[in-house]
Amino acid sequence: MEKTLVGKVTDLEKENIENLYERMNSLHSLSLTLAANNDLFLEKSYMADKIISDLAHTQTEFNKWWDFIADKYNLDRTVMPSYHVDFSDGSLYCLKENIV
Image 1: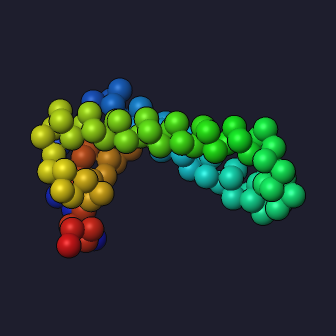
Image 2 (image 1 turned 45 degrees about the vertical axis):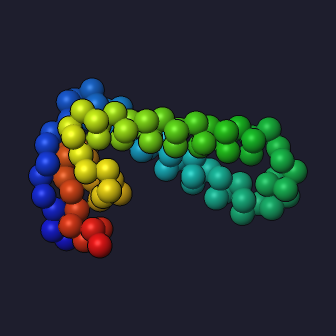
């Protein structure tokens, strides 16, 4: 995979996106686990509603973070899905394989 360094986010920005990313993954895993038990999922339990609501909120915050970063670092919005933050050092990369 070819990637081009386009900048480096601050430590706080890196921590924010890493937390959002981990939260989305955790909520997604929880929703899959809940869906595997169809009775709980179909009952529209409080837990299922809470997970879905939290996942939607976290996705919104994730998108807002990327909007902020796109503005701050003047990123090309036509290739937004190609950007990636390295959580180890905050490097901001554009992944070439994602660009059509």
